Image (cartoon, rainbow, N blue to C red; front, side, top):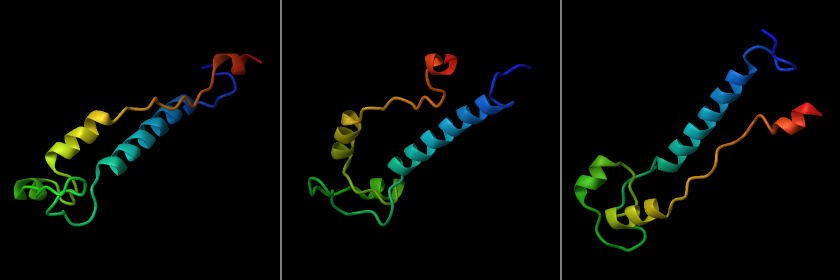
Length: 89
């Protein structure tokens, strides 16, 4: 199969690398570490015991976490291939 200058399987490797990078970023963002707090780090309200057991390492109460999730803006993915114009020159 003719693939230009890329070796066989290079495109699939780029796609897999992009997916792996994004999954690692999401895991790092979502995974609380350490011991759960008894009171919210932002508003000082008590964190219910059921929430602390369900999510080990939780630092925010449910209201503050919902506010933070609502403010989250997903970023665009990474284009590892570049533009087609740069490949034609």
